[in-house]
Image (cartoon, rainbow, N blue to C red):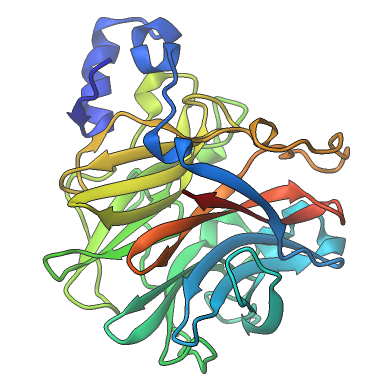
Length: 356
């Protein structure tokens, strides 16, 4: 199939008017393609395993000290997998090489308690070096639930802190009834070649979350907000949502996007939620960062790369990688960091791929 440029929602909406939805209606659902990105992946294995914690959202960066620094989410094992929404903190670990082993340095952002927008969780870290500062985009909430999730930005002159913590969220949900009126989360940031600051974000609408018509509550879509400065204000793009798989039917969607610019192309990794399958990743690219090409497979289920023990009964996301984040060295993507359930403590940890 020829890959065609499109704002996903618009072009598929036209097709949906002409065809009853089925897998055969969209060719790329019939014949999933492995992207060139996927073909370069080689599994390294797990890292950042802690006996008393679940680990998620592993965002790496190479520091001026030549070490690899990872900013990651973790929460107490006693809270089970669902603790990410009401008890996550963001921690810092360091290693001499991307494969590890990693040593815990400190917790840099923890829930602040009643009265703060990030009172009950700090999650989704994504670390960047921008304009001589380290920018850590993240998500917080104030009631331990979905409806108060908001994107924030902490900044520091050093990877070791101190971190300037925001008093207010960086990006708020849309007006009631809009596609993004429930929350803002899963931040993905890049500095555009034109000097602007681009922030991609995930959201969904309240109605489809509160009154779901499918087993998965809500339909996750991606929008873009643009600023003239790192700390904002960020103005939402008029064509939002830019990524919308809802017209494919069966509540297909995606989350966990990571966007970067390379070889005059905007590129995106995301976690698949029904396009090819729940255990896959998606790869898309774009000439302008607005209109994205049809998705391909960015990574496959983990059993395509490694052999794992049988899934423990308490882990219902076992066997897939989520939260893709890239490590860049000398301007080139060299490793893919993901999060996956399992490991020696039967919780969750980082899972790393080398990009050859």
